[in-house]
Amino acid sequence: MLTLRTERIEMSVADGTTMGGYLCRPQGDAPRAAILLLQEIFGVNPHIRSVAERFAREGYVVLAPDLFHRIQ
Image 1: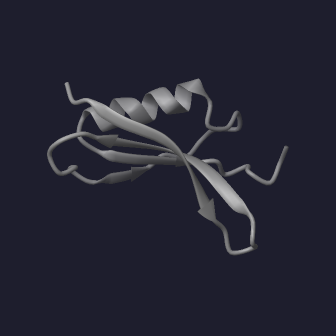
Image 2 (image 1 turned 180 degrees about the horizontal axis):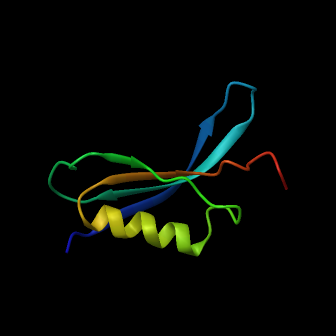
């Protein structure tokens, strides 16, 4: 099993706001590919983070953007 590097990131959006996201990367070897993991209505919650981590353990870079960042 690969070890992971996880972090919360901020991305600039075209309308001038910033969107958060959860980024997971495998440590060590080059990643297989990248996955954009879209959230359900509940946002980037513990379940979405666990799915991202599971894919990252398989060797993928995974980004789960907070698509509802404009809604409080």
